[in-house]
Image (tube, rainbow, N blue to C red; front, side, top):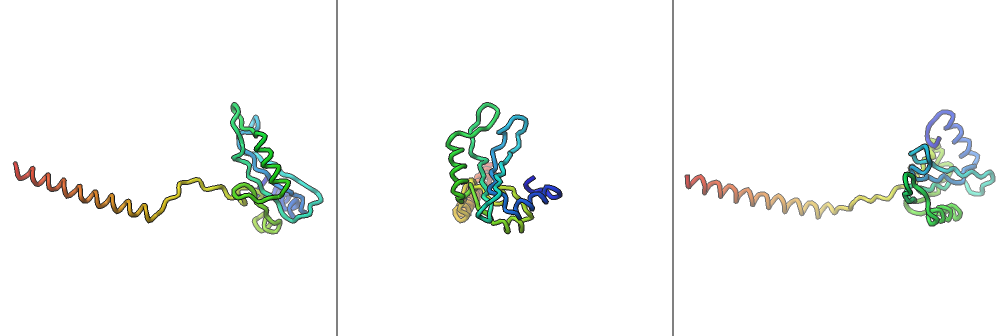
Length: 157
């Protein structure tokens, strides 16, 4: 529904062009029985005053209870607060103009607009190169010692 073409694409284009979409909220996966996929809520409003859509990535806002993920009160308050204020929060929500959505083939996937936080370890390339140089130098030093030991052993034979 959020990004495929065909009839779904026409529906999306109609909703965006007529300014009916207030927000799209990406929910965590495994929230509902019968499906493990992530789902979303599309908030529609017939008489909007703004010409944009609020994308909210709530996919990480959950607690695990049994075999399903669920929202705690604090998660709901965070989502509703951002929705009511129509607020942009880095790595959580983004306002996107309808024209920009249309230019993006009316793709309504939250991940297309809200960038996930990069949690990978930050590596200083200069520090890493210096470390590699030390390892290579140490390796060369050990090779020279091994060669000297082998030469001594060969001399004893």
